[in-house]
Length: 229
Ligand code: ADP
Ligand code: MG
Image 1 (cartoon, rainbow, N blue to C red):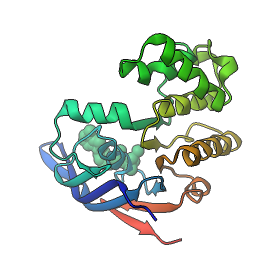
Image 2: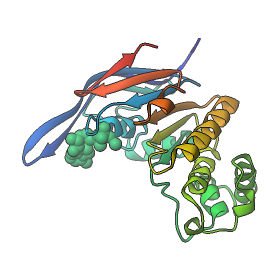
Image 3: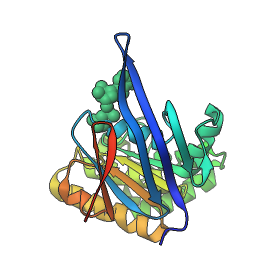
Image 4: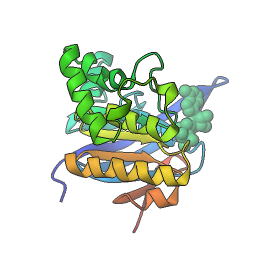
């Protein structure tokens, strides 16, 4: 069904040094996610979920193993090459939204396009289209502080998707939201995901949300285990 893997890892390992001692966090992970697939990452706190997501998102580099992103080997890529791939192909959604407080809603959404060198007028036009898509066009001129949690996450979703990335990484995106708002946000994210055939990886503690994904994997003891449906 999936001709191309968005994510393809083999033997990926990562340790952190603490008090002079190497602590393995991720050990020999094999993990594939197809283009357009949705996958939940679950597992206990401290298991290495965020570490895995950061490696997948090219924010952190593995110590060992092979990682192909959209078919391209990134294990030995330079920092500027990793940054370029992130900028063009990966959208991030965080638990605490990570909107820039001094920028308006529309400026926040336009930012990824500005980073790519798009001029202000065009980036604002694209940002407005995304804000319409997430139901936030009326708040375009607001500052993030004047929005509710659910509204902030809608804006963050618009920002993550405005550049038409291949991959969306969401680290507990509903962790700061009430249940009702969480399910609205997830519905929104999944509807845009389907529309654009974006690959979606979501770290969550919420079983209900995990079940909405096509696949679920558990990170436990540094390895990734597939949960059979
Ligand atoms: P999770 O997201 O599943 O809660 P993390 O990936 O954040 O887990 O962390 C996994 C383990 O790696 C934890 O024991 C944590 O303390 C350790 N760790 C994560 N990041 C660092 C870091 N930058 N330096 C040292 N240890 C880290
Ligand atoms: Mg985490």
